[in-house]
Length: 178
Image 1 (tube, helix red, strand yellow):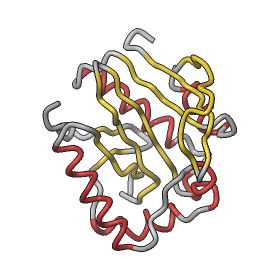
Image 2 (tube, helix red, strand yellow):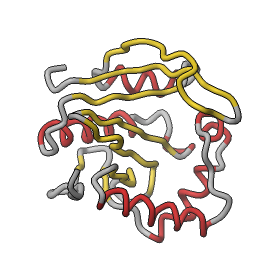
Image 3 (tube, one colour):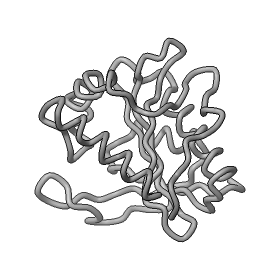
């Protein structure tokens, strides 16, 4: 796939805006990655600011290769609330991912970010199917999927390597028609 373009105009609504990550965001991102809730549902956490900076370089390289695009989710004051991404572009499909810093949870930011990404993916990128996956015990993520119109398709048993073992995954999908 060709390089994924940054949206123009940038993706935004009355609650959140999605923008490229900046160097100044690294400390906020690092703190969020060490949050116990993030750790519970993620199999990755950088050890220090240098690893977050390197990860941001890798994410930009992946965008240029057309593999994924990662956004900072920010509020009206440009404060980082979390992150959102589209990834795994294959045969008209893409995955949607997101996370929120502790202080941003429960305010609808993830729902707004996913809706913005979905409209852009279908309208500008020509994606035919979005997939959203999460752990069966990640009820907050499942609520975001459902509020955004994703349909639960099932449980993928022993789907992913996770923390030295394997994890089941709940699969949701969204089509341009709903």
